Image 1 (cartoon, rainbow, N blue to C red):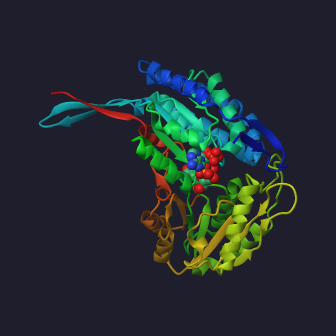
Image 2 (image 1 turned 90 degrees about the vertical axis):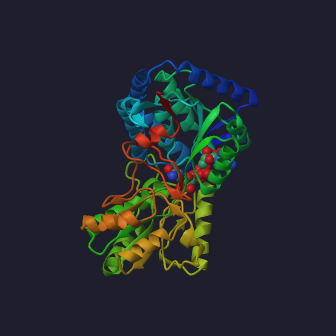
Image 3 (image 1 turned 120 degrees about the vertical axis):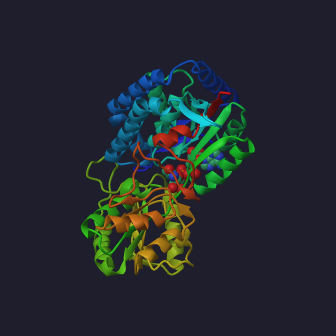
Length: 455
Ligand code: NAP
């Protein structure tokens, strides 16, 4: 299996890369391990300076990086630049706040005896990442681990190999150090061998539930710590006192951003009966009138999906949903011709017996549920195997907060769509995975939190 980049807009092959041999992978792991050892006497502050340089390079090269993402997986150029700036902000955040967050913490035990908690690196972290955010998913793992002194080896999704190569060259240019960040073109079987390598001490996966089950069990078998950032079917709840204009605007954006291929997309709109008719007619109009086009054109509203396979899988899910009784409020689906275009679909009347009720739709397909009150919002939100994020809209912040607190999920946003912010923890519960990325919590995931006890 070679890594093949196919332009989602034109269907042309952009680049191909050969798989690395066993010997090549071994040599790269040797260099990563050498980096780990070499950093033991290097301060967090020294690495923070290099991280800062990496952040600045990301800002400088945002056009080039965004263009590569558009050619690899169809991300709109404006969204691509936004993603690169998020990466830069993540690197700035850890460079700025990280050293303080890693300062030793005093503890006491017994009758006032002293102990101190220190943060240390643990070794190589394997980062297995998806194509939908080809840069930020990687930098979420790279920035905190680099600061700690953990080398990161990347197994990126095959279709965004060009993005992986660019990111690796940027890390080199920033002077992060040989072995600090290494891209590996490897097969799934080679990933199994890498996880089993004694020098690999952490595995961070972002991807599907299926990949999560496989990688988490391989990490478990090798007794290696793992974090799992998996799928979601988040609710976007509109309570009956919501600012409807704001809710409609955000609901559209939260479903169609990145052509709907976001783990925290608003996949289920849950709207209270009093305002349901207005909400439904507004979104129907907006979803129907969307402008399709090239990801490189600035006025494109909806770019193609990442691959032909993504279109086929999504359409199959929609057909199955309709065959099981769902109603098509907005008829969309695959567009004939060149490019992996998929027009938005909105489903209503999805019953719990319909397979669609519990599935993640990874593309521009929304579901609408109308419920009587806040209790019903919470019940529906929690009737899911996922628990990644969510949003609640209401002019009464206390009411929205009460609903948010009862949703079984890793993050809830009030009167704003879910998003990624370097200062805030990001992660899920249930089948959405475990562990947290970004913020202070993301920094500690692969740290050795070592306690030194004084007698
Ligand atoms: P995927 O098929 O699970 O792939 C993710 C990564 O895992 C890719 O690098 C893939 O490599 C690799 N992989 C898959 N199976 C593997 C195996 N058996 N052994 C080793 N590596 C394996 O997911 P995707 O379709 O690219 O991404 C979409 C999913 O990611 C959605 O469910 C989405 O919700 C989730 N996601 C979650 C978050 C979050 O933060 N929670 C963020 C973004 C996306 P290949 O490409 O070579 O198969």
